[in-house]
Length: 215
Image 1 (cartoon, helix red, strand yellow):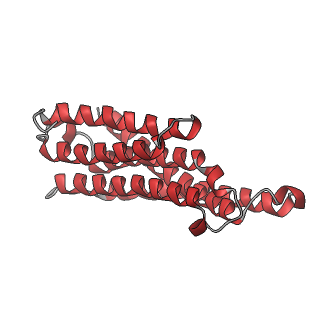
Image 2: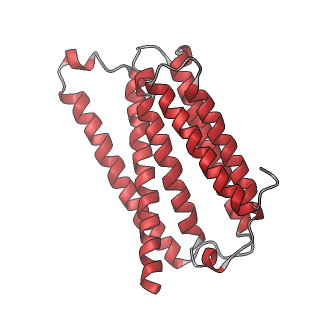
């Protein structure tokens, strides 16, 4: 892959990342004789690392300059948080047993895979910041967009927490026995992720709207 041009390498990385995600999610639903979900997670993270190298080597262009750094970061965030949320739903049954996560191998494996996705996101985000070194990464408009997106995220998290509180407070005792403490903790993390996803989507949408208005 190193012999490819940076743009061709970036396209190949996207295809490889798609293959990794396909293995990741198919392994949770199909009886495959090897750990497809784990292999998929490793392939996806490897694709992200190659993507990092491609991003560093691709020359700057006018098309890239028309998109604010904040919008680039927001779209990357939308993609990664969407994958993390999907992974959390896929692996939710692993947190159902009433066993501490530290003594639950399935929950521990799910946590490591989700953690790998977060690490890949942080690495790519830092590489993008380095690519824009010397440029103004945020101004008053960026601050307004961040504030608006943060307000939407807080609303989503408040609604989610209230929903869980109502479920726990008004459900019959027999029904509550089906929810273990690790599962409730997992549900609370999903609420936080939903707020983060909403923040990234709103930010990307506001940047896109402003860019379309200027064009």
